Amino acid sequence: MPTEFITITTILSIIIWIAVSREAVKSTEKINWRKMITLLSAGTLSTLVTTIALFQSLSFFH
Image 1: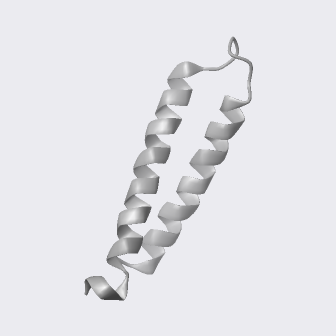
Image 2: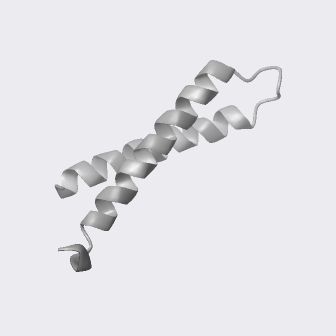
């Protein structure tokens, strides 16, 4: 995979996880659960894509 793709996905993943952590520190009554579940899903997916892309770029898989 192109290096740019991995870089963009990694930056996007970091931004998503920062948003998750900001939402998680709110009190239970103030958490927007729909937003939290969406962010967690997007963060998990972007982290998975980044991890797979990085493992594929390792030399022993070529």
